Image (cartoon, rainbow, N blue to C red; front, side, top):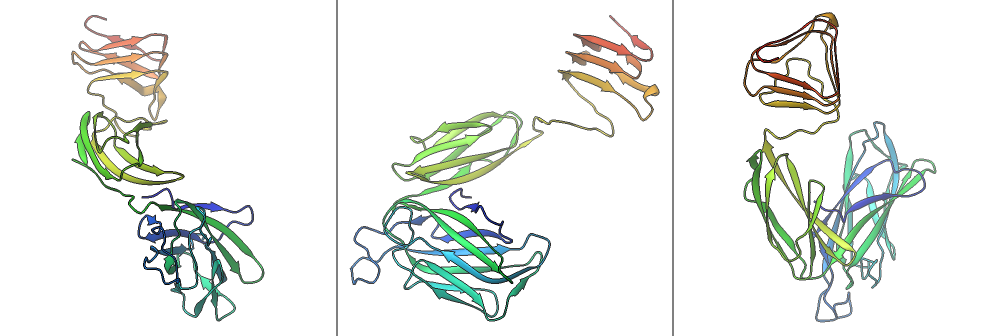
Amino acid sequence: MTIINTLRTGPEAEPMLEYKLHTTPYPIRVSPEGAEEGDGSELDPARAQLVFVASNTTGYTVQLRKLTVEIPTGKMADQLALSLERVEPSISLQGWSAGRGDESIVFTTDESYTEIAPGGGFTFQIDNIPVNHEVGAVELSITERYSGSGSATLGIITGKFPQDFYLDDFSADTYEIENGGSVKLTWKRSEGVQTDLIYGGRCEDVTQDEKKTIENIKQTTTFYLIGKVRDVQLMRSVPVTVLKPDMVVNKLTVKGAFEAEGGATVHDELMVVHGNPDIARFRILHATTDEVIVRSKLRLAGDSDFPGSGSLEVRSSATVAGKHVLCEGD
């Protein structure tokens, strides 16, 4: 997974198609110093392939007649290609062809337009791109043109990394643990890469490490490893599943029975209702460890029954609409 191939829509009309970018190599790396395109130098520039996957998720047919891909060309950090003279574009749509400009590739159809049905899609790619020498983020732009005069543009941000950059083999010693268990994460990285580990709302600097043990994990967690070089960054991820995890939810609705084997703590209001509120019942079963603590308000819309040695503690107020029975030490 990466956060360098990200979408940015323009201020004009929203594009009708959705795009994903895949690059080879991943990530793209800059050319060695002295390597130039077509000058007879002994060093060949690094090459990149861009593959775009377009899909129609709008729910209606898109009448597409032209696609233009702008590729910043030159030797600056925010430019990708040394030249587009020898790149090799192609598209999977029947009856379409590609043309090259100084900084763009234009795909057009032989017909008035091509219909892209809902759920449909296609791919187009640009091979043999000579990458320049400067590390940095690059914004590619795609302009869609439809039947008539409609159009929309979006940007896709990708990045160029140093020649020797790598952030690989991010893994866990186990991908399934018990509640409260631990996991050992390992990875490999090149020198000089600022590295952060993000999980559970935390961000830890692990630039000096290639392993980390995380203890007392109570919820299923995805760990993200981010490597940063100048203004580009690459992210790897590892999911770890916790069996019987702790749960934190904004609202929980139980349509059947609810059973707590240990204690249950309610910080605001506990309301017990039934299909008919007049017959709702609240019961604590016989067990020496059964306990319910209500820190604000308890409302019972029926009878309450506390047999055995269970306990109920209300720290604010309690309202009972029926009758209640407490046994053994009430």
